[in-house]
Length: 440
Ligand SMILES: Cc1cc2nc3c(=O)[nH]c(=O)nc-3n(C[C@H](O)[C@H](O)[C@H](O)COP(=O)(O)OP(=O)(O)OC[C@H]3O[C@@H](n4cnc5c(N)ncnc54)[C@H](O)[C@@H]3O)c2cc1C
Image 1 (spheres, rainbow, N blue to C red):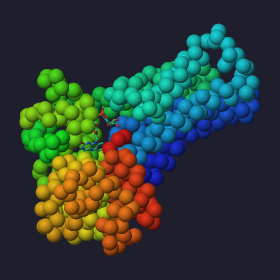
Image 2: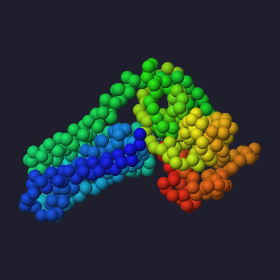
Image 3: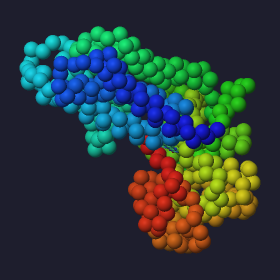
Image 4: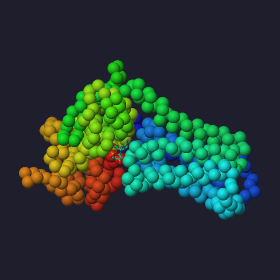
């Protein structure tokens, strides 16, 4: 059930937790011999550490945290908070120096181990945030980046020990209690996310029931829950994280996000996957009977969250069709009275996924679906739209109600950028453009 106030409440609690160390410091030590700048430096350290502790909560993919925002927005926030934390933590010693702690804090080598621990934590944090922001430019593979990112526990541990043994804050009982609570939140979030939940999901693993080739490089895995268990409930268009346990055949065991391409109105439960990198290149080697852990559902890219909109435009590129086929199947199964124009872009005819099923749904009348295929590398026989989806394509296809429709976009990044900017140029307000990026 959607609770519109839940997101606002979470943000409020989050902000309160970040600022709580300052309040506790002010109440437990109201009088200070230090000046404003020194106290500001101390406060930056406290807020930075609180931000770091709560990063574990933000990234643990907890449903009650994710639901109001969607995982992409939540991870975007997690990244922004990492940058804020690093800025505050880097300024923390500088302000202490400017506030009277002495330049030796920055320049001398013969400092106590506690200070060096803090400096080392800051260096590791800088490396981690830099690697996250510039991952594409550094050509850092996702799995390597994830390995590096998992060192966040070490960074937080070092920062915590530094805070525990440096300065006077831990002398106060209230502050000590607060930091143990913060440490508890971080440890519980991390432990649940990395250890407890994966082992629970492994025990409740699904089985691959069918492996179906859709096109030359796209496969659908139909998945079956363990005996006696229904598949988890989800909205059409949502995604899950999937781990295929095929290690005994020498295939990679990695966790990846994929849309659930089936309709929640049916028992069948599936994901449709394109060969696009190291892991997905092996997807065709999956066999019926293989075990698969599923974690989800996540995401807010679904028409069911916008029930007031009955005139929609779906714009899909390549494998970006998967959330749309889930929504269209669901509309067909529930006989939804919805009008949809689907613009579906591919390189060639051979790349079009679900072509005949889309035709069948269009012929069925519920939903009222019209499909326009656009090919960027069409051969001479092709009679339809060609090139890339742009403002002109949208104007040609959406001949009625263009300004009042709700738009959904999912495809490769360059296409999404072009389409979203075309929609904005056409005067479509942001709240009527929903999009899903296939990268987190
Ligand atoms: C919300 C969402 C829904 C998606 N739905 C589908 C779908 O229905 N069908 C489909 O074919 N693809 C889907 N993807 C894309 C799919 O996750 C990537 O293609 C796949 O993870 C690539 O892995 P690789 O090792 O084969 O390729 P690589 O070349 O290693 O990775 C290509 C890019 O995929 C992303 N990626 C890789 N591994 C992960 C990971 N473990 N977690 C998160 N991102 C990762 C990274 O941005 C990486 O740069 C979806 C992605 C997201 C975020």
